[in-house]
Amino acid sequence: MSTQVRHITDFIHQWAPPEIKMSYDNVGLLIGESSSPVSRILVCLDVTEAVVNEALDKKCELIVSHHPLIFQNISSINPSDEQGRIIYKMIRNNIALLTAHTNLDAALDGVSFVLANNLGLDNLQFLDKNYPISKKISLTTVFENSDAVLKLLNYFSAEEAYFYEVDGRKNGMKCFEAIIDRHNVGQLKNALRKEGLLKSGAFQVTDMASPSDNFGMGVIGRYPDEGIAMDEFLHLVCRALDVDAVRYSGGSPRIKRVAVCGGAGISLKSRAVSAGADAFVTSDIKYHEYFTEKDNFLLIDAGHYESEFPVVEAIRKELSEAFEHLQVEATEQVTNPMKVYVSEFNNKTI
Image (cartoon, rainbow, N blue to C red):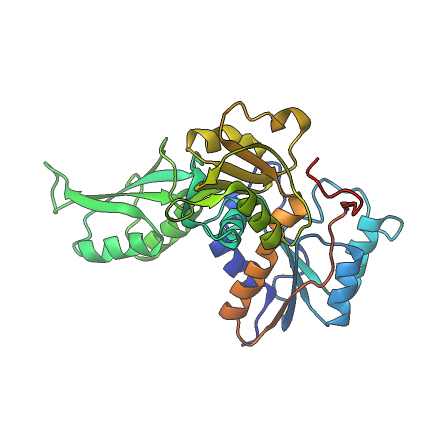
């Protein structure tokens, strides 16, 4: 059976479920039919006309992007403006578009994990786990095979699954309880229904205040031993992201513990400080946000495109390994609209 767009969509959504996106975001299959066949895929950060032309030249049937091409409601699709030309060209040439944006920002091994790995950090964990998507489920049943029920719960990534006998009830009734991420609840219910385990009033779902271990924002990690000197760290950031310069404020003589957030993550600055980070790497920092309000703390603006672009190669690698028979390439286009001029006349820090 040939690979279809839906197979790629299912794979990406296993990694970064669309249900964990920010409310303002637009992710998933934005253009194309899920049943369309796929043999070549182009991965990019931004969908520009040059990227679509590259996809045409390489005969790609699918573009996988991080930033959504269609973000707000559109009233027309025609070649009179850039967005219209791009969408029009993709539809005419049967090129589908799959986007994973804030759902990939919040996913394990997503954007910030890739950035942290590129910086050589160890012991990675989410910086902000305040992502209330966990649900507590309770299943009451007379099904005798407890191991089979627990196995089914575990299959849908349920955590802390256990059961107990219900006192005072006939027929050996048991109650199974577990913690599960909300996007898996529907699939679990369908599986329970197929097994005849879902009866009226027997399955309950309640909200939980505790966060999920699988999703969050930003990442914090560390360098071994005594860490590295600040100048060495600044050089490492430039080298890892292939940039000539970064903006920064504050400083710390040794960088041991580092927080990162690919893209616009300055809202996590206080979280980085409270987590004991010596440095925080993110982007899109405004003037007044550069004031660190803490001694021995280095704040770096590495650029939005620069801090997120490494995820393009990560997506390409994941898809290549999962679909070995497909041709998956990262775009050769530099879609960063921002340019930086570095004068050779005076190379001192300004």
